[in-house]
Amino acid sequence: MDLQELPDLAAQRERLGEPWLEFMRYPALSVGLYVLEPGEPDRQSAHTEDEIYYVVEGRGQITVGEEVRPVGPGSVIHVASAVPHQFHDIRERLTLLVVFAPPEGSLA
Image 1: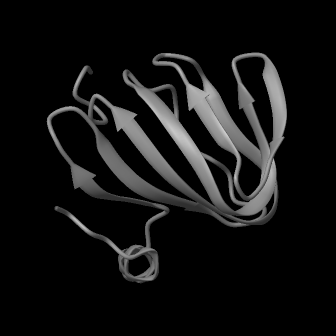
Image 2: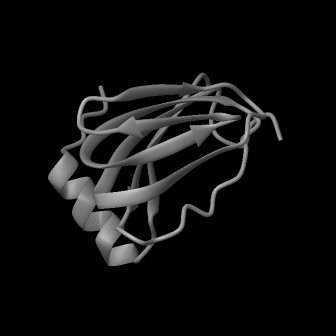
């Protein structure tokens, strides 16, 4: 078992000063915490793996391909591999749990 606590992960990410913290990596998937502040640009690009975003807290919008949708606590978003996507118009700190399958970068 690998048990993590969100407050501990958030503190670790803060200490690193990075928006992204991968905290689990296995042969079939990887999991991380991604945080964007209001007005902060989302600098990610399309990934070579499928991913799931779960919005823990915050509000904003996401564009996936040509589709734009609002997101907030409890939103679950699937983004297929190679599809351009970006969070934007962030009104409240956006805290996202991100799952890649297979692990991020493994198909690059």
